[in-house]
Length: 430
Image 1 (cartoon, one colour):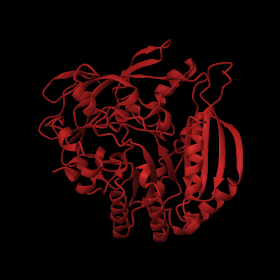
Image 2: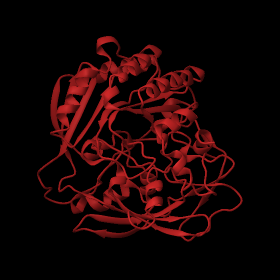
Image 3: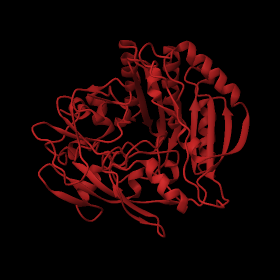
Image 4: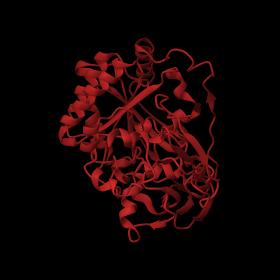
């Protein structure tokens, strides 16, 4: 049995690990490639089927240190990539909030990060990849060769076949660390104004939002914008991380995230980050704050948690306040509530979540019907605003919402390998 990161979806499936890209696939059951299983919902589970664990496909193939191009097998993690490239003055072109993901997972979920307004999604930097189909075909996919499979696989949730290797472009960063400006703001409209100004001056930005604030304070939070330091490092350094472990006893009982702890945390966080501050920060802490806490998902207890991430177009951006008011009244939510804007750069993936607009992401302890009912209401609000939900974070999206979010899903279905499936795909497309 393998769990999703949210510990809500527990797939009763057989696990087949492969070490070489030519290793046989398991037979007799539907297949699904998996990596580090950091997806929150059921895109990484395949109940009553088989999952192909790709994490042993962890070899680097070629690193062009002059032009910043890397080729590696699909099981290599972002953390391993950073350890290789940072000492040579290169950085990941796009990274989500964890480095514990594989390059294959990054392509399959077309991940995005704090620089979407200037870089787009990770798929924008993919040059080519290998795709192994269940019938034995091994396809070279790029903008010229098998361009249709190239577009279907970026954001294709692992359903088009096994990504065996990936070639992608890097970003030049002689100093990987960042200069951060932390700005406390009072409302959602303040957030919008800060975002608009920041997109002209800073490469990275993200906002922590107080999910319990309401009324005129709805959307208040702390805005964190950053640029890489201009000073070249005197000597190359390897990325470092001090990992704290969530005790094993945590996660065997009740969730540590509740209305009392949430209200206390939000109050303390706002107090600690009041006003405006500027400081230099190592990149590990700015980009991956939760990576320092191993198994942080345990704090939600044995019932696990759901995440809700939506994006709404800019013309309907004020609908975010309706979501925040609803969440505040419910008393649910999490310590880590993220609000940011996404830019106009279009992804090459036909099923990519990335699109222009405002995106809101929150974790919710699993309180049963109280939580699922809240999600249904939030989904209706997002649907009314012509928004979309993110499959990599989802466990509850309706069929109707999926088809609205991904209008090319019927076209995409033609590229799904007939032997590949997932709990998510069976849930939203039938």
